[in-house]
Image (tube, rainbow, N blue to C red; front, side, top):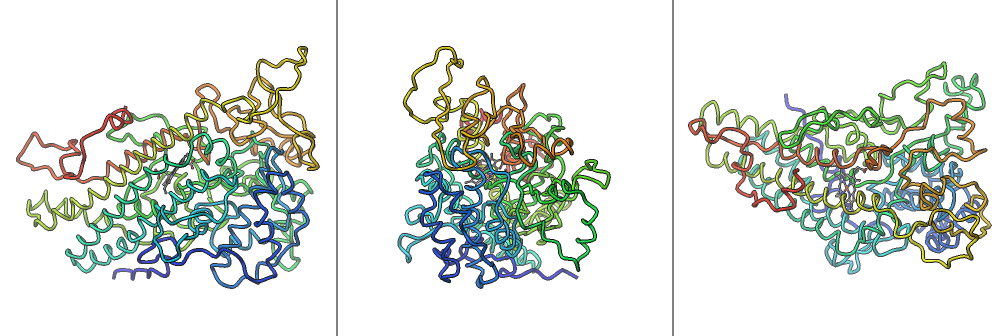
Length: 596
Ligand code: HEM
């Protein structure tokens, strides 16, 4: 018997807006109890700029999340805590903080648990729950959107988020039609299937149209050097001084005598207890978009570990043995130690939340990203559309008897895949421009692109052409002025200002930091590298080797197209992937180039 489908509500899908909530997110928590958070948000960019954010956060009370009622309030609170916490950890020209104070960590973790998320910035917080309509009656598109919060206060950052919000809106009708398509397949309602696929294809075309607009108002330089650093999480961040992640104060240190947890930890040393407070999370990435993941699930796109599968369009490269994402990483470094203090491979995945994954997605990075999507959005439970298309293909070859309507359905399925492939084509170009090029070129000027007065030169201390570090005395105890430099002059001063962008592989661990002691005790933890020093291969949010990964993902999408070849016509043997797709445009030069 067929398993009944979950309802749209259970997936938290709206028929028109998809994964975006149908009403714009709350602009403010109205309960005066939460005023300390909202007041911080009123002054957020200013405090960060003035170097006063951390000290003001220290003065904030620890608020009880349980006074939040509606899910909209939880989402607003989550956005606030994402903004404050990432700014707290990364600062502005401050040393990254290994500790998140309890007044952020405790409510953030509880709210994340409530929403089925991890306490770290994610796509849902900055894209789905971070917009306002200029005209409340107007559409959710780029002519009518503005953001509620940004880290940098820049229009480029707003545009980066809003393009992505507008993508979610443009494809908003697709998720409900994916579910109805599956329902229509079960009912053998082929008119319905064709209609659903047509709507999905049109939505995807709109998605691609919006993605092209990223270039208009988001400057790649600003993105890479001023925005992306704040979206970084604390996984694979040894170079930034966070080899073990961040200590969530008060979260994993509250032990209740009546729970088994208490018995578990009573024998632990102080260091082991400290280690248990560290959490490691990937940062925010649109790879956490439920919409794109839902297309993959619907069309049965198979993703593999990078390099593992030879795609028809790409030479196979060896699986990168240094890629942390060959296994699902644990979010707590302590989980990687067995009782003897030895590291064990992290095979189990997230501690928050646990999700069963469908086998079509064998790429661990993409699977890991699922735990940064709101839990109801996981469509893995739903059957996908592909098995029906494979049935049609088999019918064609066995009986040579597809009806015109069945052929139309296959064509539409291919057309949807083609749109997804076009999306990934354009995305590869974007990443090349916004990340790879920026990382390779480095900042305009060595100290991070800031114009500043050249100090009087002391010829005896000249450092091979790099400008001095622009640090003014600050009241912050964590200011860079107080600490020894993290890099030698030859490795580039910008890494001191933007440690998240560091290309070299020396762990930037500070003397006397909690992690410096712990990494001596547990040297096997926390020193993962994210750039190959020889090739300078740039890795993404989670240590993925970005370009091979994204190109493989694009090719895996194209490979799913089902081309019907006439068995009578030998010139039409498989491999002519364009033949089945009436919508396949002529290859552009960039297409040809990207394929090389
Ligand atoms: C300036 C714009 C963008 C940049 C620089 C960018 C960068 C990246 C990077 C570096 C990755 C690799 C994984 C990671 O490290 O997180 C990635 C993956 C991904 N991004 Fe983007 N991205 C951008 C915009 C978007 C937008 C607007 C979307 C739409 C929702 C999107 C969807 C995805 C998806 C779905 C993946 C996973 C790989 C795949 O499914 O093929 N990205 N992106």
